[in-house]
Amino acid sequence: MARMKRDAGRIRIWRNDAVAGVELLRASGTQHRFPKHFHDAYAIHLHERGTMAFQYGQPQVALEPGNINVLAPGVVHLCLPADEQALSYRCLFVSPAFLQYAVLDPGATRLPQFERLLCPGDVELFQSLGSAHRCLETEDDALEAETMLTSGLAALASYSGQRQARVKAGSEPRHVTIIREFLDANYDRRIALADLARLVGLNPVYLVRSFRSSVGLPPHAYQRQLRLSRARQMLRSGTPPAEVAGMVGFADQSHLSRLFKQMTGVTPADYAKGL
Image (cartoon, rainbow, N blue to C red; front, side):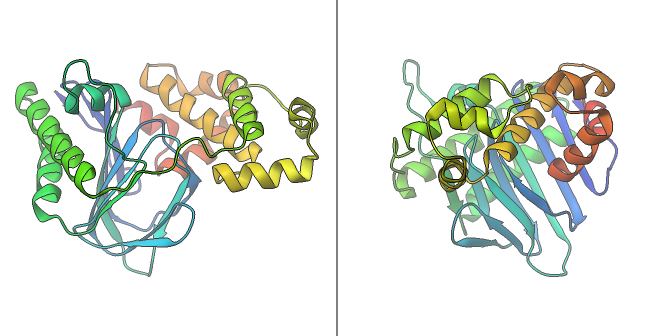
């Protein structure tokens, strides 16, 4: 059965028991500005009203009604209203495991390229994914909800296979990879820039410049995003918001609450109520 949270600033985030590994967001008439961040799932944005400025690197993309924008886990981006008009949109956050289950044949392991996929005007695809989102929002029929979602994801995979050019892999400098892996393993620890500089044997200023150029965020902001990502996982699993802050490395609950609301549009407490 769908379990939905109350409207928090016209942004709602919830999950549906029919599909494990999928989270849904619906924004209605909002002008919330999301600073640079990334997700731990595939983010599928279905834009319904207004114009949203969406940026991952350069150049900036203007999302119009009917556009679909897809980002792979870990892609740093920001999104905000392009003008004074309020925005309405839906998002599906799909775990890599569920996407593989939905679109790959048995034995296959290579997903289509979804790292940065913009579908500007495919009406049928937009309707398919939108119908799946609405079904997960309103229906209690698990078979229907999962069938509609997997059908929509299969259509998206087909679109990607036909339209998306391959993104060059393996271009990240080795020292950036080392720092990312270190931060991934130590997201909850206090880490000094000098520690990272010693780890890779580089000047701190060059290290920060190189990391930001490759990842899209400086090291401290990347670590903060890892903490927020882990906080979402813990809230989804039922850990009380009051306990999460210290467990993921934030100084106190107010610090977590302020950043969590900024990055997601809802508070940790409201997010937890969607469980």
